[in-house]
Each structure stands twice: as C-alpha cells, then as structure tokens.
Image (cartoon, rainbow, N blue to C red):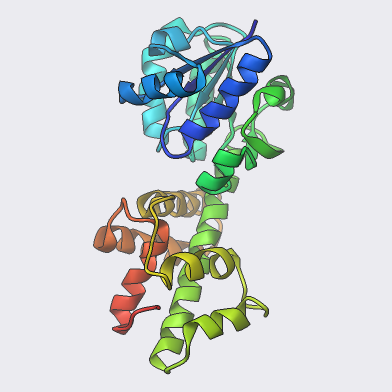
Length: 294
C-alpha cells in the first residue's frame, strides 16, 4: 500500500486532491489531506473519502503533493515536517514556486533521503476539476517515472529539466499570459475609444494573427461580460511574472517586455486588488483610457 498526501486544498488543490484520492482508493492506497484551514480538509474527507492528517502524519507518506500559493509557504510546512519525513519518499511541489527555492528545498529534502520534483501545473480550475492539467516537471527523471502513475490530475506531463526547471517554465508561461492579456486589453481600449464594437473586433482578432488564449478564452467571456469570475488571482499572476523577471536577472538575460509586464501586473495588483481575477488587470487599462471594455 502506497500512502499519498496532498497539502493545500485551495481552488486548484481541492479538485487535484480529489483526483488523487479517487486514484488511491481505486488502487488500494491511502490518501491523506491537510489544509491550513482544517475545515477544508474535513470537508474534502467527507466528500471524497480521503483521511485528514496532521503535517507530522503527512510527512510519513510515500508521495507528498504540495499545492500552496508561494514557495515561502512550502518552506513553512517543510520546517514542521522535516524531522518526520520518510526516506525514499518523493515530494511533488505543484506550487507555482521560485526556481531558487527549489534548489534550497531540494537540498533540505535530500538530507532526509527525500527527492523533490518541482511540478507546477497549468490549465486553471477547469483543468483541475477535469483532471486534464499540464504538469511541467523539474528534477530527476527516474523520480518522475516513479510517481507518474499517481499524477491523477494530469492530462499532460512533461519533464522539462533538472530541479527548478518546472518553476522556471511556469513563471515564463504565466508572464506570457500576462503579456498577451495586457497587450490585447490595450488594443481593445484603443478600439473602444475609436468607437469600434469590441465584440466584432474580437471576432476578427480571433480569426486572425492577433489571437491568443487571452483573446479567445478570457476577454470575451470575462471582461466584456463584466463578470471577472474569481479563478486565478491577479496577485498570483503578478507573483509569477515577478519570478520570470527574477529569473531573467539570475541568468543575465534581456527580456524587457517580460519585465514591463511584471511591473504593470504589480501595479494592477495594487490598484485593482490582489484577490481579483487576473483578467481584472484590464480595469487599470480602462482607467488609463477612461473607457470601459464591454
């Protein structure tokens, strides 16, 4: 019997842990869950049949999943669990974390005989619920193969390099999301001021070379409708773009567009609100242009 532990039952973690629990129950394994707010863990156990565990109990699992907002919070739970970890275990960190944190955490875990995989995910809450997330994994390839059968929330799993590579790819991916979202918002604001029907404009853009995920799946459904459903928080997107900017500096690269995107998203976080949906960043563009995208 393999014991799987899932730590962090937020908007992404809760459905991801549900897939892990179903997989575990079908295979005769144990599934433990923990959340900072204990009531969420008890609700998960009631709904899916997982077992509520303390961090010390979760530390004895064979595979430990974390899905927390930041690497700093992973450090916090690691500090509690460190002395209780089981040698030979694999820690799969699905947090959108920092590459430098992966290196430090990997060393701490290795001292306990535990292997770290940085394995952030992409696909949003819809992908988490459907079990179709893309997982970008950094760390030893053999450790990934050992845990691959337990990645029940994944539709696509890609090994992208050694430790920290998964976090790096996720940060750049989300910075590109932010850049496309912001640029499309600017373009639509200009068109709105010119008196163009934005629904018609998006119809053209989405059939032309200017299309992106932002234009096809986000702006029409969330911004023009004025719904801005709370899925992926603006503060988290700003954090990820900031990590991409940090990465650029650490490798002595030149990525001024990504740096500007990070700065704009941070400004939107401060002025619009960190907990707002990431598409609400375009409200700052609306303020800058004294127009509403609708």
